[in-house]
Image 1 (tube, rainbow, N blue to C red):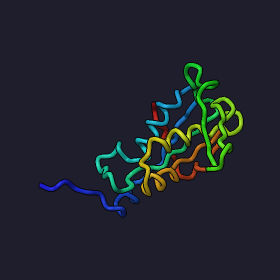
Image 2 (cartoon, rainbow, N blue to C red; image 1 turned 90 degrees about the vertical axis):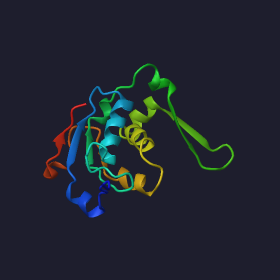
Image 3 (cartoon, rainbow, N blue to C red; image 1 turned 30 degrees about the vertical axis):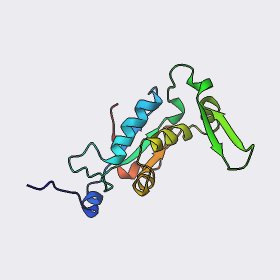
Image 4 (cartoon, rainbow, N blue to C red; image 1 turned 45 degrees about the vertical axis):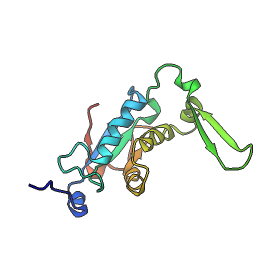
Length: 144
């Protein structure tokens, strides 16, 4: 008996929308759960090389919890390739500047580093507050 493999057209039909409330949730645990949903690993038709995942809307990104001293110690780096042009920003400053960036960065790090991963990250929608423009899709709440 052969193992069934999902076709890309079958995966498009089975897509649903989920809404995740990040209020008080630890950043890493939230990101791992969201990455699982984006990848489609929670479905029985999961196929590693096909995008079988769902859309995820994260609300209250500004209220995500960082344990320990991560707000002062965790740093995000960007490097232009030129000498002396490496920039860093702490998690606390990044949250103050753009509360959605740390969540997007954490989820992206848990997805495949190929074309499929770049396709999956586009299905993630992150908002700092409770309002989002995806009410028409009727997203279902996720319990973490």
